[in-house]
Image 1 (tube, rainbow, N blue to C red):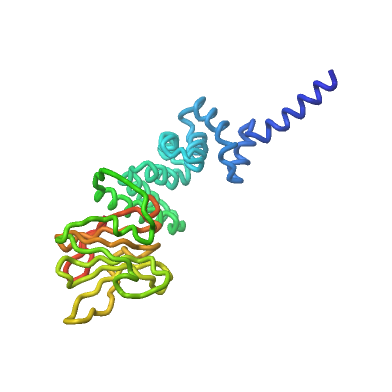
Image 2: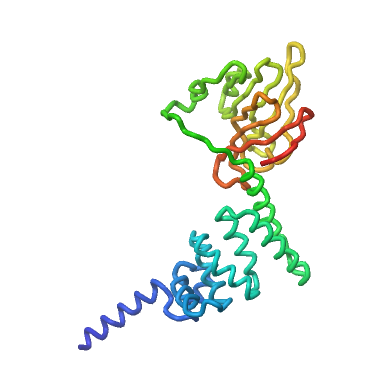
Amino acid sequence: MKRKYILFLICSFFLGGVSAQTLDQARTLFTKGDYEKAKPVFKKYAKSQPSNGNYNYWYGVCCLKTGEAEEAVKPLEMAVKKRVASGQLYLGQAYNDTYRFEDAVNCFEEYITDLKKRKRPTEEAEKLLEKSKADLRMLKGVEDVSIIDSFVVDKSTFLNAYKISEESGKLFTFNEFFKTEGDNPGTVYETEIGNKIYYSEKGERGNLDILSKNKLLDEWSNGRPLPGSINDSGNANYPFVMADGVTIYYASDGEYLCHPLQYEHRYVSCTGECRDAV
């Protein structure tokens, strides 16, 4: 009997390490950032008292922090409805992670307004607001892409696999076009008539930036970085300009993109200024 009792205590101890057993334990774990262990208790309390703002806030944040943004939305909405402090900060993030970018923008704007009234710092919220605005612009420029076929090619010669029409221009590696050697991962796009190129090259920050050059008689002009937010963060590479002369596609791993090396398109006017960004 004594052995069974000791065994029960040992089992209870280890089970206690798996997840919180009481609300106080869950709150302690929440404060420490151990959201996975705290989540079951907050879920139970939020379910038993669905109109309690704090329970819904704690459960919603735990869901958000453990990769369940969809599940986080409803409890965080209740938390905001009950005016729980910081509720809008996390609800905006949940909206953004579930591609509800307009709702995220509105949520962050309201939160920032509230912070200013209380004379509280707004830097974190403003940064999240800018990300949601950038994501919203990107979403408006999303196009359906159909994958017809795929095959594996060597990275150093993969541009040879692209068969584009003559009127679409030409693609080169950086070394191939500029007759250079070394580790230059950039690519070059040359327009159909060969009077302009768009290319990627490492800039002062050490990241790949996209620049353009114009043909001047028998030589090229100095490179000019593309305007707008194209080169603002991360690496920008693989430029391709549509036949309309204003739409550029490229890949970037910048912080405001939803996925690494996501492709997006922007509109660049003849004067080299961004007309729209998506």
